[in-house]
Structures are given as C-alpha cells and as structure tokens.
Length: 301
Image: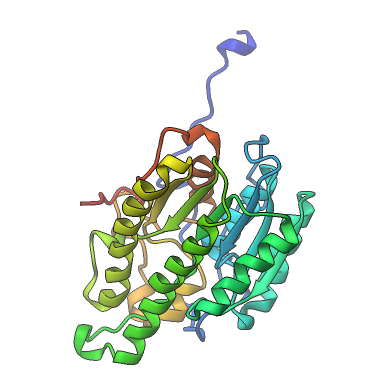
C-alpha cells in the first residue's frame, strides 16, 4: 500500500467530544469565567492549525475573552491576523488568557474593556482597535447577553428586556455603523446569531427576539454595503458549552444541555472557529447576507 492508498482517519461527530460535566456543575455568577467550569471548553488551543488565510488582517472580536469569541480570536491569530477583543471588566482573567493565546501565535493583541450598551463606548472600542492595530477589516459582533426566565414573558422584566436589546442589537448596530465607515473593499463583518433566532425557546424569548433581528440585520446590511465590496454574514450556533450556560440557566435546565440535538451532545467553541474563518477569508468571496448554522443538526427553519 502506498501513501496515496492510505485510508483516511474518520471521526464520529457524535463522540468527537465527551459530554461536559453538567450535573455537578454549580450555577455561577454572570457572566462567568472559564475557570468556573468543571469541564473546560475546547477553544482549539491544541487542535487549530492555521494556513495563512487571514495574513495581515486586522480583526475586532467582541465577547472575545471566552467561549466562541476566544475560539474565533485564537483561530484568526493562527491564520495570521492581528486581533483586538472587547470584553466586560469582570472578565479580565479570561481576557488576559485570550491575549496570551493571540500573542503565542506571533500576532499583535489588544484587550479593551467595554460596555457595548453605550454608543460612546462602541465608538471608543472601534477607535481603540484602529489605533492599536492600525485599522480594522474584520468585525465579529459576538458579545451578547441572555438570562433564562423559566416563567416566560411573565418573568422578563423591562430592565432585562432593555439590557438584552441594548447589548445584542444596539451594540451590534453602533459597532457595525462605525466600522463600516472605516472599512475598505474586501473587509468583512460577521454577526453571531443563534438557533434561537429561528427556533425560539419561551424562557429565552427576549434573547431569541434579538437573534432573529440579527439575521434580518445581516441580510439588510449586506445589501447596503455590497457595492462597496464589504461582505456581511452570520453564524448561528446551537447549544455550545461555555461559561454563559451555567451563568444564565437554572441547574435543572443545563444538566442535559445539548443532548436533544441530532448529534446528541453540546458543541465546543472550537467547532465554530472554521466557520468564522471561512466567512472572514477570501474563500467566501461570493458569499454575503448568509447565515451558517452550526447547530448539531437542528435545522434553521
């Protein structure tokens, strides 16, 4: 048998990752830190291998300190991009770790504590990114807030509804508007939506509303800036194991988190990174206004 005849190594996606420890996982204070989890998420630290797809690019990833944002920041850096991350001040420990991962890939990193519910903070975040990295040609709107209310709409306060919309929609709008004004042809915006945007859970009604809005915003902004050569797309994660889960759901809700999807397990942040790299790179040069579903098999309806 020659090298060309060797059989490929196949991985069963249902068992690629062990189920995270959830039954013994205590609830943690929002927003949660990676170190609070009994089962640490995989962000691609040992697995992601870059190939220069984003060489010389300058990216901003909001919510880049942990979870999906950390996996994206790590992948972008290993693909050759300099990366700035936006994070909450209470997530400093996680932000420091993400910065270390970016710098270990030989790329420039910047961590900026910010509250994207405020327009002037969004302005400061974009300006700080441009000042530190020398520009911006990739924006990943990934930061979000959710808090499950098992009583549905009756338990969602006006204060929570306002916080969810300000974080998930207002922040995305302000950041996109300010970034687009500075971007050149070939730049990209990637928005993190969710399976909740098409399959809403009653306990996440406010969050799901914003995620549906992000899908519409992505399509509309893509049409708006297409003639400028700027592409806008989205990624819709399914149930992904991050600190946000035990920080925003009751224990009896997350004990079997992710087991109802066709693949039978929650996803890991590392399993989304390649989708963001694809949309940020020239591999997707003819793709705009689209949403890539990474949901473990649950269809976007």
